[in-house]
Each structure stands twice: as structure tokens, then as C-alpha cells.
Image (tube, rainbow, N blue to C red; front, side, top):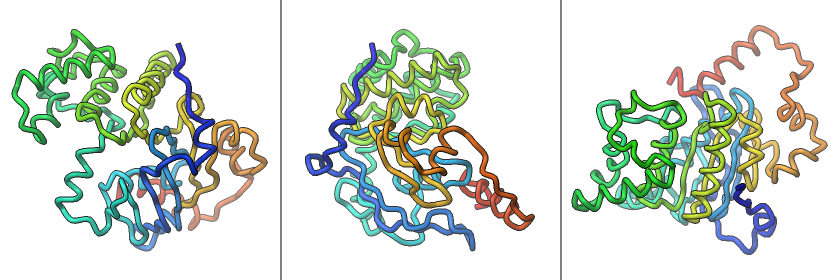
Amino acid sequence: MTTAKRSQDVNKPEALKVAIKVRDLVTHYGDRMILNGVNLDIYEGEIMVIMGGSGSGKSTFLRHIMALEFPTSGHIYIFGKDISTATADVMFEIRKKMGAAFQGGALFTSMSVEENVKLPLRELTDLDEMTMQIMARLKLEVVDLAGFEDLMPSELSGGMIKRAAMARAVIMDPKVLFCDEPSAGLDPVVSSQLDQLILRLREAMGMTIIVVTHELDSAFTIADRITMLDKGQILMIGTPDELKRSDNERVQNLLNRRTEDVTLNPDEYLQRLTGEALDRGEYR
């Protein structure tokens, strides 16, 4: 059964609170500009999908709003706090309200599934072992991994690794969940199951969810709104239907995976390749 989205609500921003506010965000890696004046409001309880072609800056943007990296200039407000000026104590409290599911799962191979899921509780709380076990198994049940708690990551399929990572990401009941390419490397059936899991988690826990993906089917299934980045700038923000109806040629090229009729000279081609590598975190 498909979980309903909230697109009708995000068309009325005056009725919603802002969970993450981005203002005039600029990022350079050396002489290369990766993000150029990005402004965005992400509302509480919505699923915001970040899309864009290779080298568009979407992965860099995600690392910034996760407070893993800091921009050259501009401001990011999370729960009303400017993370560029926040003290270490304030950042610690902010991070406890954030969960992250990384592209490869990032499970510790030396730990069982249950130990991976319990890790945030062990590091950030004073809960006793029994309470941590109960909480971990409840979250594993939510992601349909009940009974798999004693397995090692090497014994899991790709989809199961993603779901275990999701359980760990929500073990602290975060207010904001970040998902980096959750469907990457999965077959269509497993990818669809993960989409439905994301929708269920938002419905059950009321979280704000930010997803970076290049999978159009997934984006159109889960997104309340989509932010499309292009060459470090926001090309368009809108609901999936609004993007589909857009008369912007560049938006349609990206949605339909059409190449532009542009010939790059060697210097421009090298700059494009370097920009894509920087966006992936290489050449740092």
C-alpha cells in the first residue's frame, strides 16, 4: 500500500515551519566554484529530494547541510541555529537530532547488525544494555529486519545493508534524516521497497527527510518537492508534477537524460571532469 505524500501541504509554506534554511551558500574547492549562491528552505516533515547531473554540486550541498563540511561563505540554519557560528556544545545537540544513511551503508564489518544499530545509543546515551537492545530490535522490526540482528554485514544483501543503515540512522528518533543515494546499486523491486520504507518512516516518525538521488522513479515516488541543482546553482524547486510540466529546456534535458548540443573545448572538458571529481569528494 502506497503511503500518501504531502505535496499539497508544501504548496502552502506559510503554514509550515522551516527545519533547514540555506542562504547565499557559496563553496570553492581551490579556484573551482562548486556552489554559487544557493538559497533554500526545507520544511518540517517534508521529503526534499536533491537532484542534478554529475558535477552539479548536490553531494557537496548535502555534506554542508549535514554539517560535515563548511562553505566558503553563506549561512545554514538547522533548527534555527546558524551552524557556521555554533559552538561545539550547540553542534553536539544539533547532531543528536540528525540521522544519516550513507550510500554504501557504512556498516562496521566487525560488528553484528544489532551492534551497528546500537552504536549511536552506546556513544551518545547512558542507556543500559537491555534498553539499547530493545530499541535496536524495534527499529530493525520497522525496517523489516527482525530476526537478522545477529548476522554480520557480510551476510546481508545490498538491500538489507541499506535497511540496516536506515535503522541505525533513526535509532535516536532524529528530527531530520539525510539519505545519500539510497537506491544506488539496487534492483527496481528492492529500490521500490526502500522508497516505501522512507515514506513509512516519515509518516510514523514525522521526520524531515532530505534525499540525494539520481534515480528519477525514486524521486518522483517519495518527494514532496525536488530541488534541481545545475552547475552549482538551483535550476528549479517544485513538486514532481511541477518539474514534469516545466518549460525550462535544461530541466527537461535532465529529466529525460538528453544531452545538450554543446561542444566543449579541452579546457572546459577538463574543468567539467575536475568539478565532478570534487563533487564526489576527490582531490581534496
